[in-house]
Image 1 (spheres, rainbow, N blue to C red):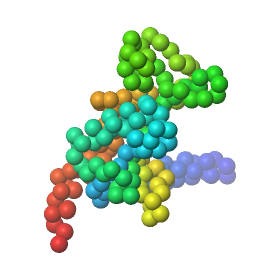
Image 2: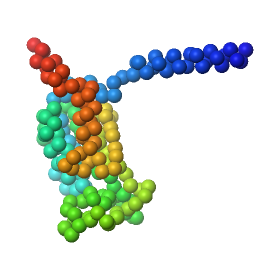
Image 3: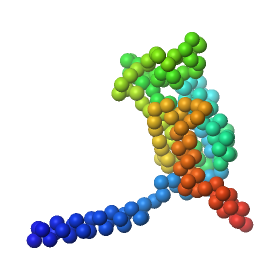
Image 4: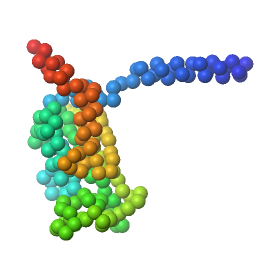
Length: 190
């Protein structure tokens, strides 16, 4: 009897997996196709907030520059005017006092420049390092943000001028909702 049950499970399980695979929701929500405006901020606040880490402010500027080249969404200057919001944070390492500090290569300037950290200098190492974070959220009616609709992280993913995490987002959105199809759909509306 157990042999028949085992055989039945082995036959039904792969079929269930196939059915489940076909009913998956798309990895890129439709809100990205419908959105017209975008805003960029750090986890800790806006670009010009003095309480926001300098590395995060630089990352915001780099992401805004890259977004302006993509031209899919209009950049806006306040969250309340945006359909979607990119929320980012540069990776940090603990400095020994339990506080988070930017990692090597994430401060303005380079070796020999004020505030710069050279490529051979280390700030933290090992498991305390955190990756750069890139999230895209929707603006809710109360002005707050939804849970992330799209999220990725990786070491140095927010380094400009080629912001890899933004490029991954662009590729995912353009693949799911090609720009030509989006433009044609907009022009057919009355």
